[in-house]
Structure formats: structure tokens, C-alpha cells
Length: 167
Image (cartoon, rainbow, N blue to C red; front, side, top):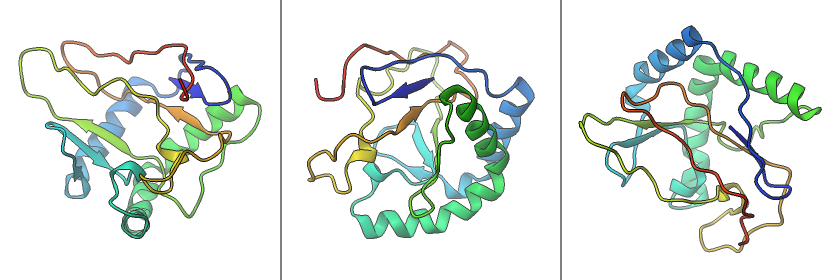
């Protein structure tokens, strides 16, 4: 799923990986279990550093510097595929800022038999804050991408709505 912050949310489905490539990525994620970051949300872990999960900028940059080489070595093929597909779709090449964390993974480890309520509804704006107490930075040409590698046995999904992040 791809959403642009240039206007109201515009989402569409874009083919990126086949089934064996998804399995390759999932296996690699599990192979890097020692690098997973626990979150306050039960069953949710991250591989890679998210700005909104960092207590401060120095911690964020230390963690990003430590994790980026491992993520790039392991998932460079996936990042290149994603950049190539987005370049075709957008008509211009998206860039990864070498000074910030490269995209990581949210990992849901759910062993239950009932429904998992998931996270709360939100608009991804963490890239627009350098610190949690800062006001939002002016909107930039940034993207939010969700890449489902493996779904829960009972299914899963992402809700979307036509709303800007300022509403």
C-alpha cells in the first residue's frame, strides 16, 4: 500500500514481491531475532529503528547507525526492488536519507486463536517530527508504504480513509 502526504490519502495496491520473495524476507527477519526491538504493545516487535520509538535523537541515530548496515546487507535486494517499483509508479526515484534509519519491519508474533485488535487508527507522521514535543514540520514529499510479507492465519488488513493528517 502506498500513501502520499501531498494531498488527501491516496492508496493503491502495487505488486512488489512474489510468494518466494516474501518467504525469503520473513525467514531473514526471523534470522535476525537478536536485533528485534520490543515495543510496549504486546506481540509487536520492530526490526530497524523508528523515530517515534526513540526517547531522543541521539538514541535514534545511534540505533540507526548500528542497525542500518545489517538491514542493508540482509534486505538490500528488497529495498532496491521497492525503489525500482516506486520509481516506475511515481515517475521519479525515491531516495533513502543515509543519515536516518532505513525502512524496517513491524513484526507481529501472535499465538492466540481469537482476533487481534491491532493498533489504533493513526496517520503516519513520525517522519515530520524530529522530537516528540516538536510541532509538525512542513509537509514534505514523503511516502508511507506498508508491505505485507505474511498474514495471520485468520487474515488481516489495513484501514484507510480519505483524511489529511491535519484533520
